[in-house]
Length: 532
Image (cartoon, rainbow, N blue to C red):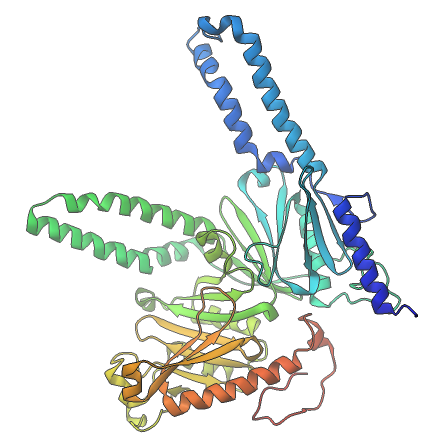
């Protein structure tokens, strides 16, 4: 039986994987920087030195002998034991570096680790959701950087390369993004670097970028002082002082001390992660840079964003500030809570013009002739109560948002004019909240599933909530208290739009659809969007 090119490609992948697990010296396998294990494990090495050298160092400062007289006879053995332990630790670091190798070939990025217990992690290039270049403070001193590849449903960073030289990390990121986006497609001859071959991928030139916006430090500090957590802490402090004054019990004020410490730590963490925030656009995605001590550079392809939320806390309204957060597969559950919050933030604080800039990058085809008016109505608009009948949902004049019916005012006296939805050819838009404003954008092809929810009171007033399910993250798309008929109609219509959008999304490479010539529409315009 003849061997087809697809079979040959799969055989090449299998050979590459097998050879990688065995750890043979195949072409294309590279090692991380020799200083990597010491940058990762400097804390353990410093702890050993502190444990064995603290007493001797203190005696030396006091002018006494280096060793206690009671241990003078065993000093050589103690030095030998301590030196052997440190030597074994260093040897472990060296072996860890020697057996850590990586390869970008056969449509995968692979990392082999371990000398006693071998492990290989790999990620398909066309499944890469985002790539981060992370530089902790010590790594910055040595000019090193860590590369993180996020894939869908990984639960944590699927592949980590720590550490490479900073220029090598950026070069490798450019190569992987070019392959993952489809900008560096293979040829029928299956040249080296083709996704179906087992040869190493050729290095790509880093795509140019254009700066879009920056967040000045004073604005970042002001947003932290006027954030939701400040309101909670301030309210708690006022309540504690009032209770102490009324009951003459000073124990209530004691609780302010840990709260103040926690607040300061939270402020510092947010300031450290949001400092010098810069957003830029490049052919391979949205590039974000931020950080004071530990710097991080993210590249988030717009086609990998599952959902986006524009929010505005009450105290930010006096300055017209907004925050943008996104759901990206692999980001929602990765790392600590603080790290995950920073990585899912496209804009920590900005004005309405900044929000429009980010929305134009995430959704370059908004699917409407008036995107500015529609997005502005979603972010700041309210329905006209006079034009919202009790028997049906009304419309926000001039923007097309279908809002909650007047009868919903008994369930949400402040928010019923605000809650609503609008659908364009490419995305579903949801807005909610009168004081804490939220505006959510979900591309049709990213709608994974939906559910209609209705409690006892909602049944009494004939309203329902529509929940859209996407990947884990800070954005939870939910249409609140829509009219029952409108919610059912949206459920059916959004199912058809999502199905049609996924049918047009034929490739995991987010640049390939734009590179293909436009095709004539194959289905009724009412059923979903048409992509080129």
